Amino acid sequence: MSERIPFGWKSSAYVYHTTGLVASHKLSSWNIPSSLYIDDRHNGQLTFPAGPLPSAYRALASTDDVNFALALAGIFLTCYVLTSLGYFIGLAKSVLTPQKQVPYLGLIIDSERQAFILLPHKKEKFIRLVKEILPRDCLDLLTLQRLSGKCHETMSLAVPGARLYVNEINLAVSGATRSSRPVEMSPALRKEIEHWLFLESWDGFLPWRSEKHTHVKLFSDSSHFAWGGALSPNAIDANVYDYWDASVLHADIATKETLALNNVLESFADSIKNSWVDAFADSMVLVRSWTRQGSRSHSLSDALKKLFSTMTKLNIDLHLMFVPSFQNQADPPSRRLTLQDAKLCPSLWVVVQELYGGKDGHSVDIMARPSNAQSDLSGAQLPFFSETLLPGSLGVNVFAQSPDLYDASIFKNPYVFPPICLLPHVIQYLRSLQLSYTIVIPDVCPRRFWWPLLTSTCSARHLLAVIR
Image (cartoon, rainbow, N blue to C red; front, side, top):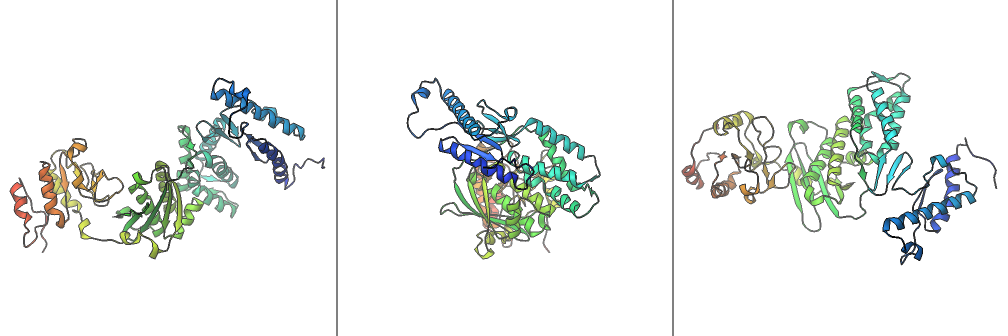
């Protein structure tokens, strides 16, 4: 036996925790769940083996009354064990009446909503710290470490994607440790700190995910000019691809790989919601950055945040793994380049809008991708139908769509620039819908069989360009 109190020892946390586990072992043997962190203890209610409860509990009126009585029994037995072992219980810091919301390790454990929730006073204190920091032009190491510590330790369990929003803060801490001078408040650092002000109006929570798994296997890849993905649940394969827009075209490959994975998840959203998703990518930078939830690259860090936002929206548990390029099923679609995906240049699209768009412009691009869908009069992307599942698409396969499935405004003035091989099918299908529409076609030589079919129903036409 030792009569020393190990306060101040380097190993004091280890001593308190390991000795406390003796009490936890006894409580668990009595069927009382018990969690321990150093000297903070969280206990559940008394449980019994499968079968009918003792008669004293069966006489209670409701399930809530039974659970309350079992929780009281658990508290009594816990106090009995601890005091018998010589523990002093801090009554002011203890919760000795059963509750569904219990403060523990700086968070509220809500057993009804099944979530970790921020303590109101800690949340207000954190927001005050953020507001004190933002007006400054420079930050010292101690302030940065306080901010980083609170984001990592308290926020990571209760706030979605918390670790993704401390990347700039961690870089600033790293810089401050190498120099005695304060760190300058960069625009990226200020933006990241400002992000945390959303807590002022956020009352949400991050629910614990169910242990039930719907297993989905998914591949993603990126090339210089396009991205691709492959979904393989069971034996049914589905591929998607599209081209990068100008804002992404010159990004580094790791950022493109991350955005490609995000686009693939969005494309297969309906198939993978509420699932356990194994995603395979051939970028070790992406895999490692996702594992540690951050990167030194600003663009990659922003792409990771976008990926996490999609993951949260779909309520998926994403497990990212590396696969060599030659085994990546998404590699071929990410390298596909075809003239069938061509679009009118902006100057010619303006002409089409002026000639046939009317006062409201065209209402829908019925055969497009996110990369080649045309824009409305305000410059925003038109609603569009796509060949396969793609982010932002109204639906898949124009031949499966009709005005009665959508709001009347969608098919008010459709526009289409179809591949040549599908021209007769598109013309015939749109004629069957009895719609007025604008179609862009090449005047090929020799003219094909569908030319008379088109001209016989055409009310107006205009030559947009001539190839010389």
